[in-house]
Length: 156
Image (cartoon, rainbow, N blue to C red; front, side, top):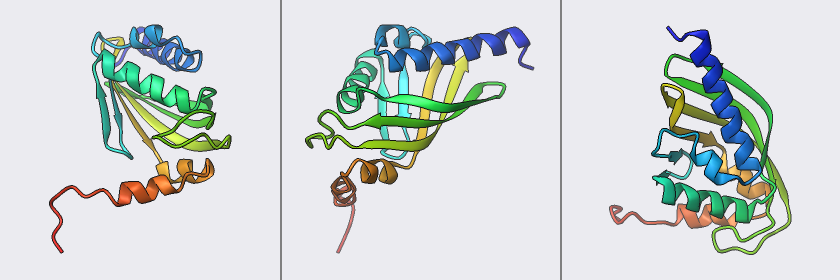
């Protein structure tokens, strides 16, 4: 059973994690992990494993969406994880997967599952509707690119 003190510490770590993502204090964000940060972006299949890859993820996403932030945050605490529901907002003000910025904003609902070892994050697994995000920012062609990728196993 999760005691109240550990529950409180986990919620504080998530708050620090999410707040420092918004303020671009990524060294502090990385420090919320157990020493080996990991993100799994479920709609794209991307995995960022280790400090260098995660820092690259931060730079890439905050270049494209420098005002990225959270709204309507709700927490659901379990024994080994905290599930966080929120609206993710931002404006496409920088290059996004090689495309010029559109200046358009997005708001998408997100579920992030933070897995823990004690009071440190070991993995953040993120679920959201990527089609909604790219459509809102005026980059629906990103969907066509993803759909056109051939994994080499298809046969005609």
